[in-house]
Length: 509
Ligand code: XMP
Image (cartoon, rainbow, N blue to C red; front, side, top):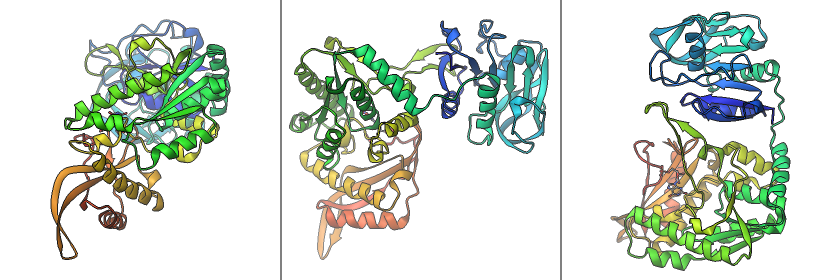
């Protein structure tokens, strides 16, 4: 593939955002750590150098040899990247007098294809404590802000464009225009990376790779496994065998409803009701980690039993997505690159001896949704909130019993239905209810009650790594609390969780 952009990561917190902005322009890109230059450099038509938490002047900062790239491909050097170019090519990078962080306005803009449609007064986002005092050899000034003279420059002979600000962040209002100017007008990339094109290419590749062999895939009801299944189904039809396990810890009616939905999508899916087995093994267990381990182990056992019933299965399909696979650059621990390991179905044992196929492995979450829409998967499934693999077990604090699951399913149902009815569901990243291991005194009619307390949690987030509680309308909370206490026997108190992550987590266990 020639129409591909290489993003060299120097450890910036924004590197994935750069990739998402490039993909939003319908241009494919890959992120690689600065110290692991890919061998197939010929496949990339342009390179973007990311920012970094390091100062280019520090000895332990990333100082890779870029001679295989410089002068050979157009380069967009962002923040640290720009300072790197300046520092090693006759320019001067020095500490800023003040830390330059936050909004700034362009005060001077040269007429240049790189800055086409970018106006004086346009807002940009700065985040740096070093500044480029002198441009590199052959450098030409392209733009300045009031405080930063060398906010943008080019080295024409080498087709290098350097910018001190971050075009990838939302607060740089014309950031996408700038990226497009560089990628399309200067580097000549085509904007052909669309969901439809992805589906067409991937289906053809899957057909060629898998042929007539059989694939098994564990469906969770979530977006990733669903989209992976529909793509595989499009490629190999009934040779894809999907397994959807009811662990007894799903939301109210979810097993039946989701199973029907999968069947309506034409998937070859087997629903396996193992709820009794999960709940039996969880009896008496209070420790959250033990609960997780038991659920993970039984899932593997059930999945293993079921997959053995599919004769001659050669492949395991997984819904792994790109952020799970990006090699991350350590921002504090020196120039080491680590690879996150991730298994969507809880880490299947080696003895399964199946080849792994991961059709979504190059996609970001938002792209998975767009591909899902292009495949005709209903919005309701694609917009579903994340739901953890261990399900309600980690929302029932302490021991899990069938009675507690039944109570929490009712509470959760009222809350989630309410969010939908009030038009709030799509404004929330994830929501759910927790059943607390405390009873409190209440009064209903003339009777004293001593019943359970539930906590409602609704958060906004982009990836679950950080989250903040959602300011749900009081009227909604009031109605939901009333409905829960009136309709769910055994609950007499409802509280709303107003903790952010960090320091709290999204789930309570
Ligand atoms: P925490 O509670 O760590 O959750 O803030 C972050 C995100 O991860 C989900 N989560 C899990 N998902 N297995 C999963 O598949 C788990 O054991 C698990 N624990 C937490 C959680 O729902 C949230 O979206």
